[in-house]
Image (cartoon, one colour):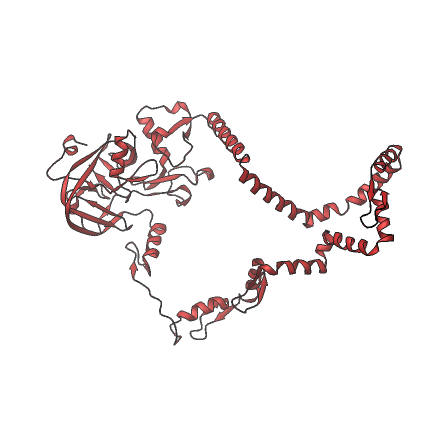
Length: 462
């Protein structure tokens, strides 16, 4: 950037202080916020284009107030972002030509600055090797190649160009603060495979240790473990595994109890196994004698106790009586089918009910269109044009500037452009001249470059 453009001139060329800049650390902050950080000694990096229009990361050396203007121009792009700048601010067009703001026109394509996540990039549009561990990393569109590249690779290239380190240091690009979205060159370092693996292993172990010391995690983990083991104990797999365990161990237990060692152990247990009847205060040795006492002397209490014990067994839970009891407990979660009014217990049963009863195609009585179930029919009939009492749905007219699609809402059009036209030139859809009170105009001095990217998705020439 030439020195005379950094000084105040009568005709300032630049943008207003509330314009946001895309930074390498994934922040979008305004010029005024950047100035405050610059004065505090914070080092920031932005996105720029080199001489061949390849996307690169560049250092912001200085932010300058270049003058005051009482007339500004608001440019609105097809991504519905807007930029307010001076009349002679310079922008880079898609064909690499540089235009002043007053020379721009509606429909003109400007050089795009597009970010995305690696997982969202279509196959064939990437300039990197795909890896599942890198799906959440940021990528940026390179106008020259028409491909996306990792942002942290651009930061690594900056360090290599400026001899911060060499390729011999290692093949793995590492984020020093472990924040994969902070792609400042000062936060990127190279490591060997062993160094990188050991570093992340140590951090992961320390984080896991702190997590297990967290009382909230311990309580949550305990509840989840209890729920899992409870479900497993009632499962068919556990039932099959344990139903033959008694028979398998029976012969070994009989042999042990008949042996001298077994008899001695049973005698020791019996001496300390005094049990007192809660009904008549008689004392017995061992559970067997106590159970026999209850059968003979307190049969009603014994039968009640056995019934309660039986209700906790797997056999009871699978029986018809047990299933009925479980069904009664589930009444608190009853749900009503909005189509036929039937009461269903549980969300899974309601889903099954819809699939089995209300999923057949149903024709519209007015136009004959087949709808998916009675629920789909009720929605269609409300807006069916052949229905005399149909509701009128308010639909706008928002045509896509890149294709023939027309959408009923601004939100629908915006989502279509974002998903369907990612690799496009940002076109101008509106230019508005605004007379205002004198307002400060700013510009950036970029190291080894003459342009910088805005969060609106275009580039300003300094």
